[in-house]
Length: 127
Image (cartoon, rainbow, N blue to C red; front, side, top):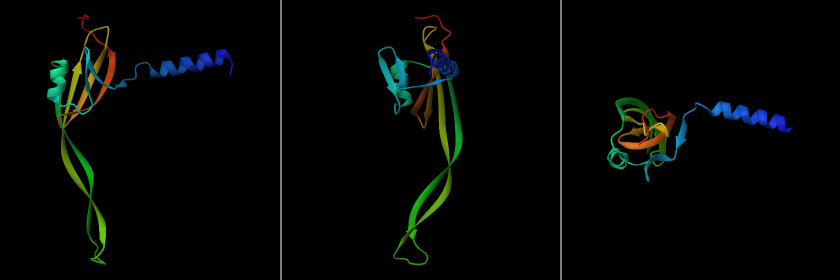
């Protein structure tokens, strides 16, 4: 591969990644980090109040597996899989730490931080 071809491929990859939200290791607030598994309370204590907070409930169907006596031989155990619909509480918090940082989107399920994604640069004046 020539230097020109390599540069073209590298430019193509970089162009593809621009504008795609990235996954963060956690929510960095000053010198502190709220990582996956943190509660709503812990994130609020670490990072302060979010700039925006959305609260919804979502229905999900999950598979539930249990072992029961087999119908053909009660001495054996057979697996029975059933579907169960559960309600999941979803919270989505947005933090805008200023124009010199990316906007951070914190996604919580059942009050626990599941992941953090980064968006565009923030809109507030830097503090």
